Image (cartoon, rainbow, N blue to C red; front, side, top):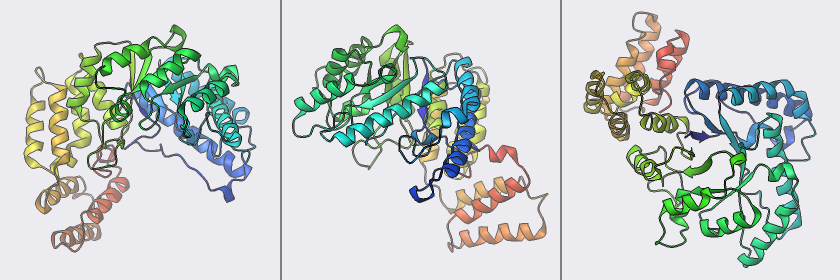
Length: 418
């Protein structure tokens, strides 16, 4: 089993992709951004390898205006060496990657121009995977599209347009149920007719359900039959509904207790789970650690080193509970650790706890800084205590000091980003 995340990282340096506006999309600028973004992708792949993350979705923003006529740069030729290097890393680490064209890539549109642009976009995404030298286990995910007031005809258009696609696109394509129009039963029917692997999305299914009789496990098992050996392990999408947000919004983090209920229900190790969640790799590492029955205490201690000051500034009591949990090196539980961590991170904190957290972080610098830096820090802290400002100026200043004095422990933590 592989557990992965989509497109972006949280708290990992040098992993931010660039883009440009239409008016600035010259060939030179597109080439420059493509070079940067491939460097970023290489960094993300390295991060994934170092953190035992073997499933990842590559951002559609990798190449600026990748499917547009505006982009006349033959990036797959210019950067063939870089793409080959990244592809080799993916293959040698047994990582599986995917791409997911967005909501405007609609193959069953009743507008021929929209269909043409959709095919251009599918061609672009396919070229990314082809240029990396990856086999058919690395997939491109697509939704069926709209209903256009006649779902039967819309399905027929999808089938007709799919048959016109180039073989190298069909080789990659998988289809997924959505949260508004096409439920899992309808997508499965299309997948079986066209011999396309089907991805089950749990949150989409929860919102756009077939009926209340068949379980999630039933539909997941039905989808399994559409995945052939050359497609690799069956792949599913997992997410949780965000609290107090519109229906279908992904949660900020994966609640570990609910995830473990889902994971245990699967009772399989021949299935890959793509997490769709706002905190990306953070939830991914959490879920990997909680499903690793051979996990070592050092893995949780490493996680704690990144989160400890975020918890301290919110809840001193939860901070102490987690420290005590980690003292037992022989009898520990990853789910218990993350359950406490989630509780601590959900706490709001007050002026006293936020000051306490800031002072602990300040301890890394108090014997290094100049008198002016000490004055500045305590002035920011005083303004916060007197409610003249929020905590952000204090943390921003501490972040500058961490960078200046190269405090790697702090820079690798999440204190400055959460």
